[in-house]
Length: 230
Image (cartoon, rainbow, N blue to C red; front, side):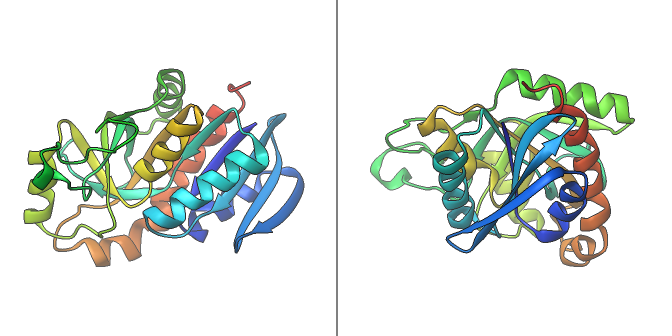
């Protein structure tokens, strides 16, 4: 089974429409929709915005549905001039850019117990996603996805993230939290983001205008990938 977690309803609707044999269950206020896509069992849910909702959703999914893989998809802001609106950022790792215990001597982004900063995404899924982007004619880049409970909307914020973490290509609000839960439960995971805004001063208006169309690229890619995960 493949678990798919998104943050916003607009990111899930088109994907759920493609499912057959659909059943739904609400747990802790989160609606989990189970079905089949290209013969593969999937479970899809809208976790809500931010790390706490994302982590709670991932843990419920692991305990209730026992997915073999979890993919977090949605939209995000670009941190590189190599990605524009509609392009896809593929995470090779994810970091929590707002996790900061540096006053006690730990690296920025350090996650205790796991004892890591960079949460590595599953290489097989990353490869499948990259191939799917190429097949769909969607421009993509691989790199680090930066997660935090902030909507990044100015150059100062963007530059701080890039200065503190290597190879960041995209910022968003859920991926590394889901990665942390997957890591402690030993579930392979991946994070992808279609670019909806430039994480700069125009981001709020860009996001409102482009989020839905950008999310459609994520859906195209995942539809291609899911059938290859067994």
